[in-house]
Amino acid sequence: MEAVLGFCPEEDLEKYSAMTGQSLFYMGGVDLKHKVLAVVEEEGAERASYALKLLQSEKELTIASTGKDGDTGKLITHEYRVEGPVMIMLTTTAADVDEELLNRCLVLSVDEERAQTRAIHDAQRRRRTIQGIVERRRKESLQKLHKNAQRLLRPLAVVNPFAERLTFRDDKTRTRRDHNKYLGLIDAVALVHQHQRTVGVRDGVEYIEATASDVQLANKLAHEVLGRSLDELPAQTRMVLQKLRTYVDERAKRESADAGTVRFSRREAREALGLGDTQLRVHLERLEQLELVLLHKAGARFVYELCFSGEGDDGARF
Image (cartoon, rainbow, N blue to C red):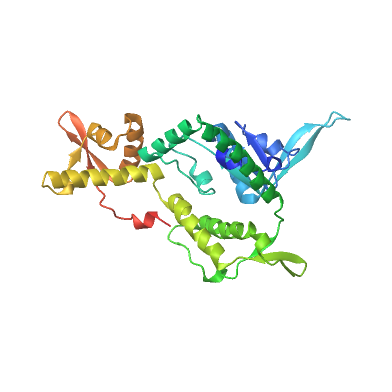
């Protein structure tokens, strides 16, 4: 979050550690239109999730509240209004997040692979070197350049001449929202290239046109981001499922057995996948609910059976 917000102009950013249930409704004095509203932890915004969902869908919030008239002391109704649209950014370590809030957002997952941890350690060590200090100063200069570039962008309409030829998954009702995200992604890519495009005017409306390269770039981004959002499994659980499949296949080959007969305990899975017990238990419970693994009692202990051999892997991608 800090890395992304570091590129955002300060005047376009509102950042909070937590929000109460009614706080958004009474932010009339704070202009949120076309800004980024960042909440450090989703848990801190849990009580405000209803307001956040409304703000995302309706592009505004209104509330009627009773208060005293300053002159007469009588009770009167005050109306409060917060205007959007606003970009909402949340981070969370929670295993389960409000589904209605999730399907209004793009979901990015942290890479928990060992190679990524190694890369982070390398970067942390490099910051302690003279090269790292120089890079940090260069980073501040680059961030300033990006912020100033954004300040040069004007609000223009984006016309997509390819819109009617585009296709999108339609096997789930939630894709009605995701389809709009995809089209908005193309618009965003085109908008940041506005100074490389010709601005047209029609009936007093200024606009630019999206190009084939804009659509191509949006498709690449959508493949990575929407592919995870449309998957019924969180990215980390999907990764655990694929690793379990590899582990079961290798054991079956080693034991000259059918993969469907392989049984494994949580301890064996923990050691094979290199995960902590609490972390693994969360993933296994999700997989159990979707019947991708089955729990069996074997004497005094419990073992798992993997009921998955790659079905739907392609469908999990956008």
